[in-house]
Length: 238
Image (cartoon, rainbow, N blue to C red; front, top):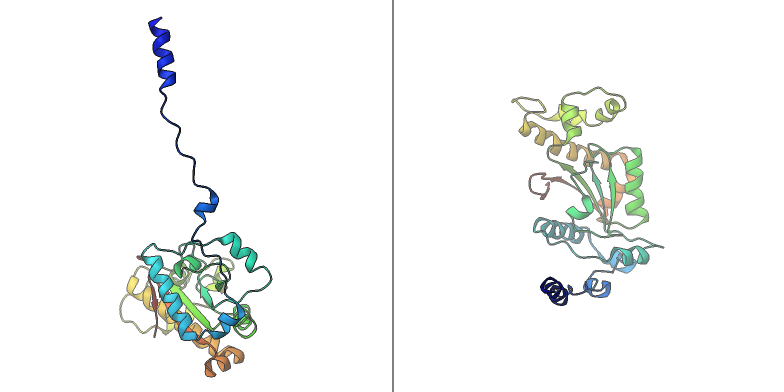
């Protein structure tokens, strides 16, 4: 009898059930749903877009990314897009471009290729992004500890990687440096990374009449940057 009484008592004194989870409606309060309109895009200047990206990177560094309702942004951008910029980045999985600049759906075009170099396809994509779709900025962004840059320095030969690295080799050869010119020398790798960014900016201007003329008319800016893998900061180049 005592055993039965104790069992019944324990059943009647269970801990209260946890409070129900917040409803989706409550969780979604404060999420950004807006996407850029044609009028808002047209009103932007290239310098304003640069400042927007810089501010976004500061939020990324402080782990204060904007909370967005991506489903709603998908629906609102279904029929049109009015991005602020196009970013040419490396394919490296450690460089999440949209997060790095705290950008949402419809905010930026992103072109990616190992070693962030331009070719005919990338140039065409940039011309579409700016001349056709109205973006105000072209940003060529390299990154520290870039495997493609290191492979170009080491003159790696492997399948289709060989001709790909040939696009980066001019940057390796252009760097004037008296120290150890190897992939193990981080100072030299950094110098090649920056040089590669700048040489590709030069290529954009030389190989695209459309983009060069747009820049000359101050309709766009073409700038470079390097992403610091150690802390997530984007350093704009002069």
